[in-house]
Picture (spheres, helix red, strand yellow):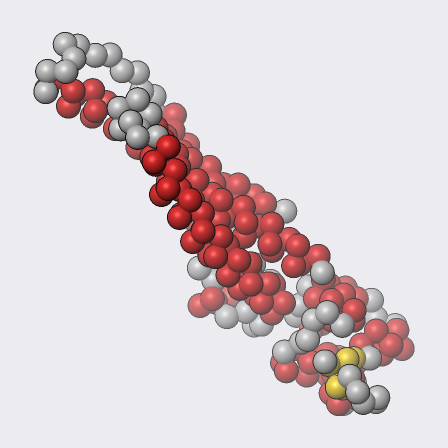
Length: 68
Length: 160
């Protein structure tokens, strides 16, 4: 199971879900599902999110048994 | 909202087509019975309402499809070759995945429903005489039921 720190980092950079969605080319519902953990993004989307948040992809997404 | 509209329009297209075919068959059947001497005369009333509705709805659906295609070209995340129908949601990758799953559910439902529809003809043995509308409407109900299952499944999966 892939987990993520998108919500934490989004709050850190003061972005709304809608803003993050627009910058990454997805809908707000996708960001909501992603943060809830019920959706695993594609590699392209994960890279776009990492680019927008200015973090490395492995710092944002990790396997469930590991912690970043 | 867009999906509700396109599914409703598509359902109405099938229903309108079913009524158009029924009107044609109704007249053709009367002519056949008259030719074969079963009846001495007949009178039928048909309207061009279903035909006009069918043409208008088809034009609207084609237009919606073109608009969707045009908008999708601007979004580099979407593969335009995946867009076949306006009912398919291609706003982003999650919508594409949900569309795929909803279509699978709808396909499975259609397979089961068609089985039941075929069997239902046993309950109406004289459909070709007294219930000539039955084959048309029951055939049209197959894609309508599939579309409704697709819509319901999509909305449930989208809400998760």
